[in-house]
Length: 462
Image (tube, rainbow, N blue to C red; front, side, top):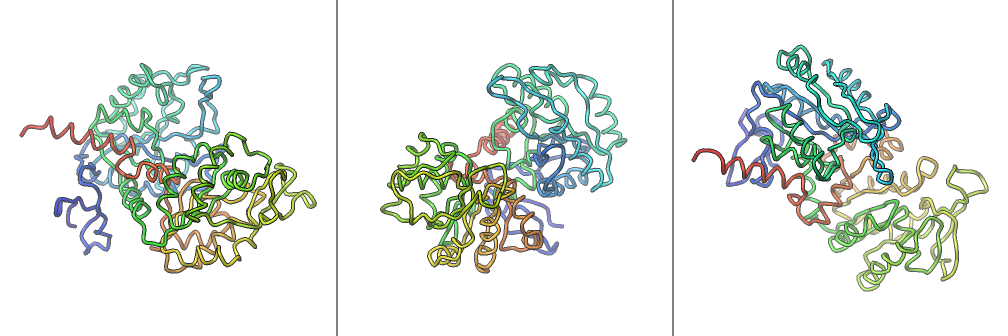
């Protein structure tokens, strides 16, 4: 196999064409890549985004599977892995406490890896405080690291990183946690594209260890460039549960797209701002924020409206007589509606919508259109219409988006994994963040890797 290396000042991600693998993926040459790392007999701290556990069960193993090539690369080249991921949101911002729950542990992930790889992983147990979570990585882990070096075990999987007091801290606890993490290993590899927040295990750790981008991270960064610089026409489909958290990415993505489809509460908010209606669950403050987008679209006309929606009297389920179709054409100032929880599939048969979706050459989807699991019909129909466009490149992102895709269309989902016209991102929110930044290398976690490489180069002998 031809080694990874430098070509025309750009770093190639992949082997030679003789190997049957892609060799045309080019990353920013400033980015330190896993294949450049010396891993022989090294303990490798590997940050992944295995945040796929809900109520103690794995709903979709995709985000685990896409990191297996990195794990194999590390072990095949002589490294010994210590894995870590966050699961859920154990930190309560109101009470400022960390709650350690078994259903937010990494146990289900470890069980899956052991079944999949037939390798033993061990999860160390640390003392924890009822309020602050795990305060320290104590010395008991040294026995496991000794076993890891001797290959008595295949890997160590640390507890949920958000159980540690220092993971999301801003001060002394954070620095202590990062230093203690660094004390476990010789090399750090970040393969967690979906974990873009600058936390202890994704960002601050790079201050203390030689740091590299894993193979999944490289692949995601390569494909996100196609969203930043799309083949046109470019249509994006974005949904969300709160408008104010998406306003930055929305403003930026609006500038880049030829057409934009909105879903969820984001769409409800836009409709309230445009038509002067009231929809249950939409905040007045968000409606004010959405008025800027409404004004912008009056002249540019990029937003493709779904006309027929589903209104329900309750969010507790789908009950006959409690939901109905409503038409945006009937909206008028002062009208009020109960919860609007989906787009009706008939919306996707309108000429304007079909024209926008069928003519697109690049489609980015970070959206579940309905309030799952009871209102799924709009999302299902949308996936079918997108698939009918055989010439477009289709980029799906986000855990909820992928889970809905897989549950509603398991055969199509499986086919998409092997279809070069599809790419499934592990982090749809991260793609939106990249769009907001306008630069794939602008993510804090990616900049940290670049800065680490620059620092190591300046310290190495000339």
